[in-house]
Length: 323
Image 1: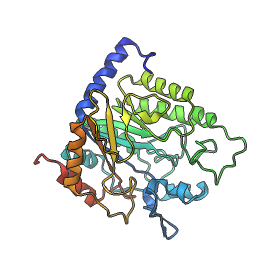
Image 2: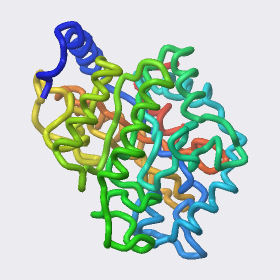
Image 3: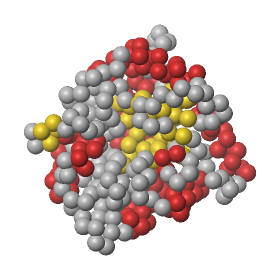
Image 4: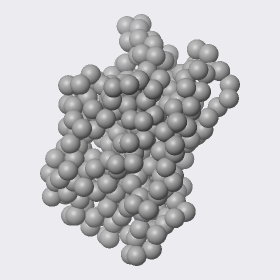
C-alpha cells in the first residue's frame, strides 16, 4: 500500500520501522471523560465491559454524557511524572488516546469544541503537555485516534455506533469522515511535533477508499509516522494483534505489537483489582520480544489525573533492570 510514497519518504519510513523493531516495549494510555464514571453509571457497576465503552454499553444519551466534561478537572495530572514512569519502567515509547470512541478530544481541537480545553474547567491541552514532556525526556510519542466510531456524532460509525440518540434515516458516515475525522487527524499530525505512530482502532464502517485517503494524509504530513493495521482495509505499516493476544510464532522481519492491560480494563475502573503479577508481565514481555513482537502495556489514569498506585508498582517491579 506504499506505492504513493517517494524514495525519500520511503527511507524515512524504513528508518522508523528499524526503530520500532528495536523499541520492544511501550506504554499505552486510555484516558478521557469515562475516567469520571470509573466503570459505574447511576449507581450500577458495568462489570461486563471495558470502562471506556460505558457510554455505548449503558446507552447514555449525549445530552447526559457530555455533561461530564463540566466536571472533568484532573488537577493532579503531571505529564513529566507520566513520562518518567514510562522511562523508569523500561519503555521506549508512549501512545495516548487523542480521541476515543466517545468523540471527546484530549487536545485543543479547532474542529470540535467537545475537547479538554474548550469543554472542561481544566482548560489545558493534555496531548500538548505529554508531547512536550516526551520530547524533553527523549521518549517517542504516538497518538491513538478513533477513526470510525464517534458516539458524539450523528454520522459517526453506525455499527457499534450511537443508535439510541441518532436515527438510521439519513445516516452518512462520509459526512463525519470528511468534516471531523480527516481534519482532526490533520490537527494531531501538525500540532504536536514528530509522532512515532498513529494508533487507529475499530475499522467497522470505514470504506477502503476512505482508509486509503486517511493513510495518505498521514504519509503526506509525517512520512516517518507508523500506522497500525487497525486503520483497516489492508493498510498499515505494522500489525496490532488482538487485545492481550500472545502469539506463539516468530514474526521474523514483520512488525508486530501486542496491546495489553495490567488488569481487565483499559480506562480507569475503580473496582477492577484483578492486577497481573509483575513477574508475569515480565515473562510476557520477554516471550513476545523473543518472537519479534513489541509489548504495548496500558495505563488508565483516574479523573484527577493519577495513574493508579498498583499500576505504577507493577510496571516498576516488572522491569528487569535495577534502577
